[in-house]
Length: 163
Image 1 (cartoon, rainbow, N blue to C red):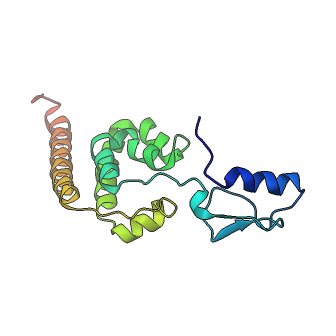
Image 2 (cartoon, rainbow, N blue to C red):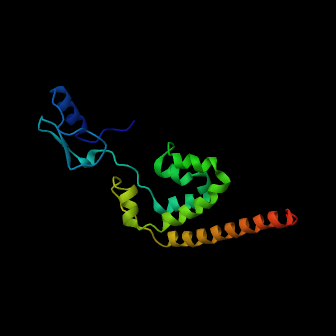
């Protein structure tokens, strides 16, 4: 079991034992300070931090397992409706996974951190691995699209005679 941060137990006990009410609700979000009327305060550094969402890893998930919505589940959890839609529409959602991989990878780090890492306490620093992954994703997506177009024309015009 995890131990409580120093000062958290005494803060909670003093506020609850004295019947003090919080000026602000105690939530696992970052704010300047959380205090109670018993003149005790707890800085935001004692509150639990959300995990950092890695942009390169999310792009890799979208490129490799985007058809199954793995990147959506990584970012938003098991209850993400768009992720489950990817699972339901699996063959078609492979192309959506490639497009989302490119969109995620081309998002500036500042915008990514503002959207997904506000409460993680870390900043993203994407480098050459992300650029290489984007080039490979673009090549793989283009190859898959050309193969799908070729197979569609094969089925429409020859009845599938070539495969």
